Length: 136
Image 1: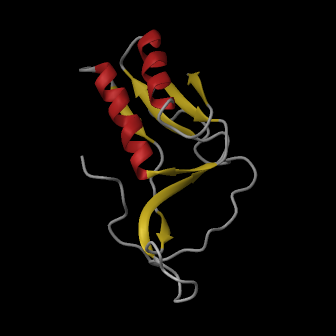
Image 2: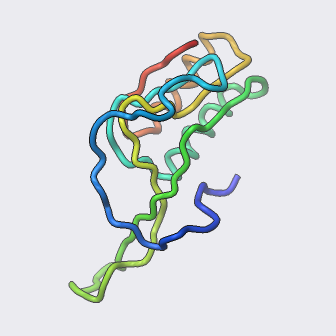
């Protein structure tokens, strides 16, 4: 699967912004029976989401359905190495999802609880935040 990024954006470059407070949207399980909930505030990159997804898929082999409840649509810019100060904002380097506490990241369905716990533990190791296993 290709790396997660938006097809089209209204503004090519965004400001950093401040991630404050707790999540109000997407805090309850909507699709599966088990979920992985965020307990911290961080920017999660498209690569980290993909690495977590692959860890879950690899552990489950066949069976079970996985939903990814976050999508990286915030562009992060970066200037080239050894570029002097000034000269404007750098070009878009990668995309992130600014996560806040309480957000559901992944959901799973169709597997026993123990397997879901282990799959999410492996996925959680790939993420830069503390997470919590939740069930319906």
